[in-house]
Image 1 (cartoon, rainbow, N blue to C red):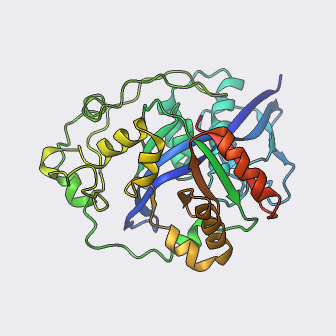
Image 2 (image 1 turned 135 degrees about the horizontal axis):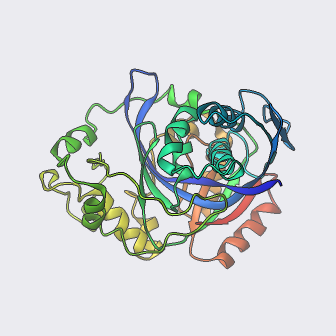
Image 3 (image 1 turned 90 degrees about the vertical axis):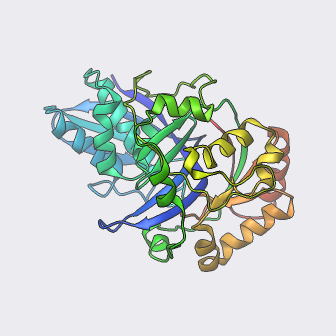
Length: 352
């Protein structure tokens, strides 16, 4: 029997690029938010091959497709002597900074686990996710918000009981992540490595969550999830304090441990949305300047959103620009106005 699942998109509320890695990738510090813009994945067991079908002509059908790669790795790793037919109905724009391909890959891992009845733990799928792509591990987590470190594949869930409305604008151009990261200039004064050295490496994730006051919310369910699984303790986190301001908090003493940026993040996400949006420390993307300089259309989208008084940000490496709003009604009014004037893909979404 076929299995039908939903693959959510993501936006990055915060993204800093820390350093260039020996493997050619970059170390980053990011805050992911999962949103309810979904691809629809239908999977079924077949005899002995992997078949990808999709309604989007821009999606590869073979080994260049991340969903294909996920299926291939899964079948090989767990010695499954069957194949998979995977139908991808795309709603998330391609090469848009919304993680659609990574999410589809994660959904295939989750779906294959269910179809073949293997009952694998999340910890057994994470290594495969890291081989597929940087964002895939985030989509395996049952969390609306998470910190991403390393390439973005080291995930610390943030259990925050807050939901945002978004207006997303995709201006119908493709932006490839590699092209943007190639233009990143690393800030030699970035304090993240220094801050990490001050942190007690023996702090376990559970104690860290208690320190950061991130434990008081229910975790939402999502299609294709593995269910609640325990997560191994993670020693230490690297937190960036470059962007702290004295508007609401003092610059933290890094010798006191990881109580700076993430405490502030939690405070403002739990607080009113206006406070969050007015605090530029939270809404930040190091890649945004590069994208805006390279693509005038993306700059136009951002300027239009901000002309409505909406604090906006490029998600990931772009070109999608999103704004956070107080209510669905407010978001719908703005979407209706913009849809009548511009030939862009405009989405109304919420945290999921």
